[in-house]
Each structure stands twice: as C-alpha cells, then as structure tokens.
Amino acid sequence: MIHSMFFIIVFFMLGAIISSFIGVIVARLNTGQSFFTGRSRCDACNELLTTYSLVPIISFIISGGRAYCCKARISLASPLTEILLGILFALSYLKIGLGGTLFCMLISLSLLLALVLYDIVHQILPPILLALFVVASVITGFFLAPSVGAFYSAFLVALCIAIFLVLIHFLSRGRAMGLSDAPLAFGLAFLVGSSALPGFVFSFWIGALVGIIILAMRPRGSRMGIEVPFAPFLAAGFILAYFTQWNPFVYIVASS
Image 1 (tube, rainbow, N blue to C red):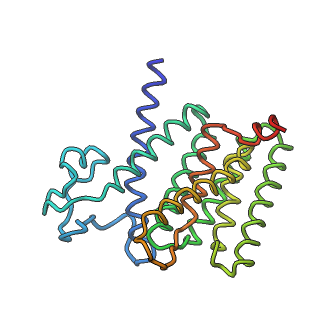
Image 2 (cartoon, rainbow, N blue to C red):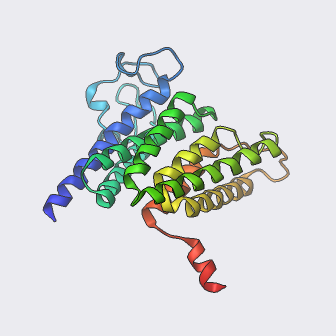
Image 3 (cartoon, rainbow, N blue to C red):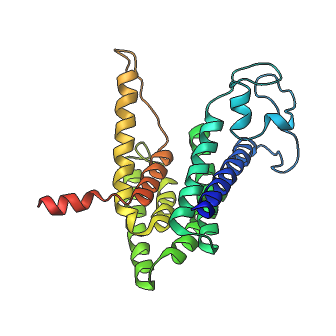
C-alpha cells in the first residue's frame, strides 16, 4: 500500500511538472520561440519569472494566486491543468501499472493536453502535435489491446468515428465540426480501446451540456452565434469513459 501511494504521488507530481512545460509549448508554438531556451515572463508586466514562482501548483497557492513581481492576478488555468494532468498520470499508473505501456499512455495524455489547450486558445489543432498524438495513441492502443483481434476492432471503430466526423464537417460546410477533429477522435478511439463508443457519446453529451449553459448565460435577446472548440469535449468524453468504464449502451440493451 505504501509502495503504491509513493508511486501515486510521484506520478501526480510528474504530471503537474509536465503540464507546466506543456503550457510553455502552447504559448510558444508557431511563434518562433524555442521551447527549451529563454526564461518565462510574467503575462502582466513582462518581468522575468524567478525559479520559486514556477513551481507547479505550490507557487500559485503560496502567492495567493498573484504574480510575485507585480501582484497581478494569475489565471486559474495553469494550476487546474497541472492538477488535472497530475490526476490523469496517477490514475494511469493505477490502471496500467509500471512499464512501457504506461510510458506510452503518459506521452499520449501529455500530447492530448497540449492539443486541447492550443485549441481553446486558437481554435485550431496544430498538425505536428495532432500527428504525434495519433502515432502515440496507436502505439498505446496496440500495447493495451488484449489481442490482435481487439486491436483490429479498435481500428474499425476508430475509423468509423473519424468518417462520421468528416461527414459532419462536410455536410455542415465546416460550421458544426472542424476537419481536424476527425483525426483527434481517431487517436482517442485507439487510446481508450473498448471504451471508444461510450467515449464518443459522452463527448456529445458534454458538448451539449456546455452549449446549453453558454446559451443560458448569454444576455437576453442576443442573437450572436457561439463558436466553441470541440476538441476539449472529445478529450473529456473519451478519457471519462476510459477511466470510469461507464457504458451507457449496457443500460440501453438491458432496458430493451
């Protein structure tokens, strides 16, 4: 038990640290800046950030959510994503155990977070990150599959989901779905294996719920359209299905 708790803490910390680095990648991707050189700066005053202000989660708590240099309020996005990836890393360890497969899963989850964050900010999925995620997910899915037949089944399900999203994109002329959501869903389906179909359903449920909330919060009488990236909903749905193993189709079959 103590051994497991030690690794849970280690993987949570690792996830938080990697999430912090992913934030740097998302901020600097396609800007010409290096990911590995150059000090980070405060978003409010452009002052160079000190080492103690860059410790994941802890720095935010100690500073009271304000920058050390200018006392500007820091967005909750950074600590929340650090906590999120830390939890996903710890859950992955508990579900998969130590080994090469876990390493592949952690890489896939890290790339997925980078894609989601970039999509939220820019409403586009960078091709290089998307390609890396699909490759990592296929490799992870291969190692997680209980048999070769299960891997081929996962491929067929992933392909059907991707084709369905492509059809939505073209039938709606790009208004309902971005074309890059199809390869993202393809990779996610490989990553979660048998949880792909429930995950796909959850994605639309989560997207519909968020859409209703946004519509309810709009000023009365406003006719402005809303444009929300779908990648976060896809990621949330598939990951939720994978870690909870909740399958709504079981209840549908049982009731019929």
